[in-house]
Image (cartoon, rainbow, N blue to C red; front, side, top):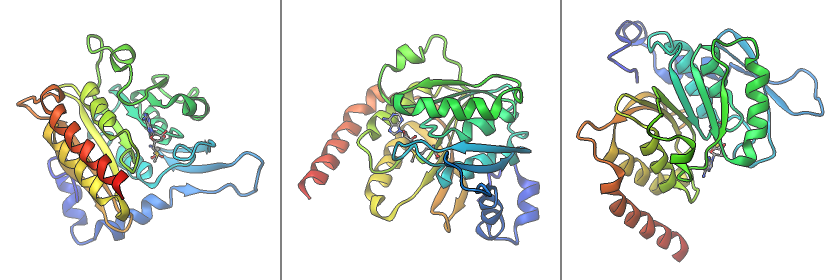
Length: 266
Ligand SMILES: C[S@@+](CC[C@H](N)C(=O)[O-])C[C@H]1O[C@@H](n2cnc3c(N)ncnc32)[C@H](O)[C@@H]1O
């Protein structure tokens, strides 16, 4: 379950442990709850040597920190140095309450956290409150509605993105094609995507379909696999034969239309 190219030493040390047994408890214990109930609901996390307080929003999916986010934060904390995350340019999509972007900023990256318009107020609040005077680069927060105004928000001519981060962005929502278009727009030749995916039994078809479409554009490998959480962390880069969505879009669109039709028919 390790990213072999980078972590041979760590792998040899941990070979005798199952990743689930060894790492998952370590990840889960990073979350703590406030000792006293207050009128503002918040959750606490310990990453990168900091206590991070996350205020929940009222939106359904952006409301809390999802377990995939913890997995991605743990990876950034443990392997950030090997990846030379410091000063790297990072865009997080579907950032929600902002934990992943906050951890990446605390490690020293130049981060832009993005989400839907209705989420960015709370996202900005959490990012600002947890990074103020603690980071080498002040993190940015932007609206990014998948598949919409991408060229206006992130023009390709000036775009520079070393990493795209995404935690729990594939589930039963109607914007999977737009999500893929967004990955395609932001991912440059040298960009690495780190995507933590939560698998849900009821969404198996949707998840498999998305992964199959994703693999048409990107090479992907599993970095972590935690069956007890139903979460995998993938690392992906653009395929060198550089198939663009312009060529594959009609095929992918057709498969999504069939999927939508099937969903409506049931
Ligand atoms: C399950 S939540 C995960 C949030 C966060 N990444 C985490 O793991 O805690 C999914 C996130 O995707 C965002 N999202 C959903 N549809 C979107 C869209 N069409 N464009 C941009 N963001 C979207 C939601 O607002 C939400 O913040």
